[in-house]
Image 1 (cartoon, rainbow, N blue to C red):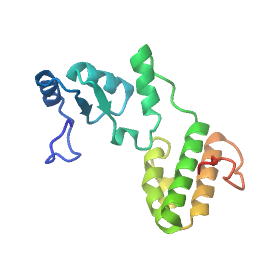
Image 2: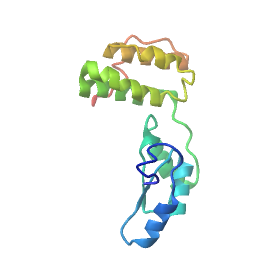
Image 3: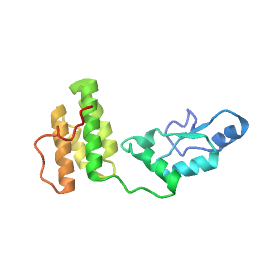
Length: 169
């Protein structure tokens, strides 16, 4: 890992140690730390010569980072950002699954951090997140997210989110 325990999540990841370990051992080495884009992933792989990457916080609210990295490593081209429809669909399914797994009470609380991660780019003033974080009802959370994304897309709000949720939810 590109950080010591004492560093926690502060500062920048340090890749020199990973590179030195890779040069010193014959087993596979996995690099980790501050990998938040396809370009950074390529840089870390090339610099450390690691055999693989492990993505942690870089995937929070950005689950498509894996396909972006794979595409960039294979083609050298950056994929376009996911559409609002895709972000909406993935986030609604994720929140519904959080509610189902943890139950309505804990699910509503746990969903808040996930929504914050997904919407960091779209809600930079944090206005929606402030409203969302006050919601205590699972269905109301889903309804508010649907309305939020409908407004982003310029569409009227739908009355139910069930059309957005996959059968796996």
